[in-house]
Length: 146
Figure (cartoon, rainbow, N blue to C red):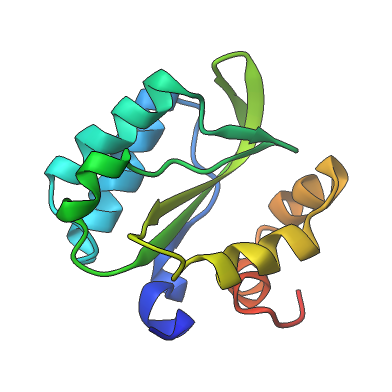
């Protein structure tokens, strides 16, 4: 499936006020559901995954996604992105960029590979958040210029 189908410019929300990690996951999950990527039950799997092993991966990034047993609640692969300029506390880690994922297999790996290539350091994430440009985020996920 092409990246344009699983990730759209409309899937990016910038400048959100700080909230707790469960609220962030519910927000991501609602976006995935509202955009037709997942069923409501998948959100439970996202929360369960984060409660068993934090979705914060370092460099101010969290990647909430569902537990394996909830994969059946995915309708099609999808990605949503949220930014928190003030940062949020994610089980003791500071997070500014949240990437919510609904994917059964490896459909999302190319997109995440582009992210990793472009934001290897914490400062890269902070620069992206400061830029406050949804098109720059979209381009990064698509492998284009920031």
